[in-house]
Image (cartoon, rainbow, N blue to C red; front, side, top):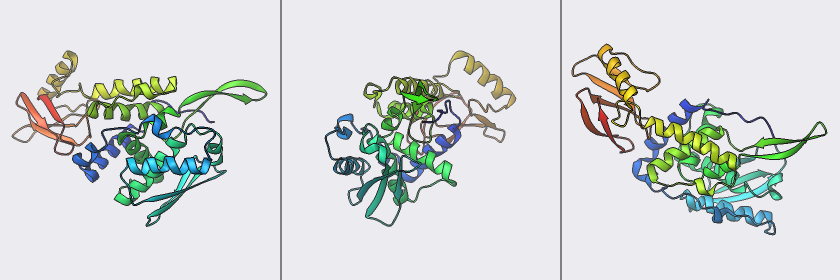
Length: 295
């Protein structure tokens, strides 16, 4: 167990991952994942054989991500990471989980969700440059497509012995911070109405989800969106007159006629360009979200 990073240090990569996911899959395909993996489908009782149980949970993930022709062979060994998958041409894939999962089964579903998502993205040919960014893409896709609440629920505090003292130590899986998982899950909830907060067994996970929800809802109230608050609208009007961009809100103005403003879609973060002419309803060409704007 190591110190847990907090906040939103990977936010730019998370947003880039959401855009890449919509571009590769299409809004219709993303919409097929409106229902999340349910808790009872990944329950792993202590009396179940660890190998058979892991195979069963792996099949749940394969079915959820619509990989019916793929087969997972799951084993256990001591290693640094929680899991690892050998990415081949398929249809058979070999997954290794840390040996601790043989006895502590709470997060087997979370670990397998991440590894099966690696297979899913591998088959799509979707990746970001660099190992770190590609892992962030994997966690973001897992969360946005309905299985990542399990990764956030792995965030908990437990007693641990350090220097002959009993202390509380935090633990989680994945590369995103707890708040970043909460952010992606909140964005998913706002799109699909799929509220998974009652499923969290960890109070820390619930708090992180709510922190992410604050940011996700804030993005829906940034100008030129009509839902923006009075102070934000006043700042937008001032910036519009001066042609000044706002890195914080994300909007920028074009000087060429007809004058336009561009801003990130609050769902997929694809940039949208609209004329500066007052109230207008815009549909994002990528994710098809309808946006009420006052430009």
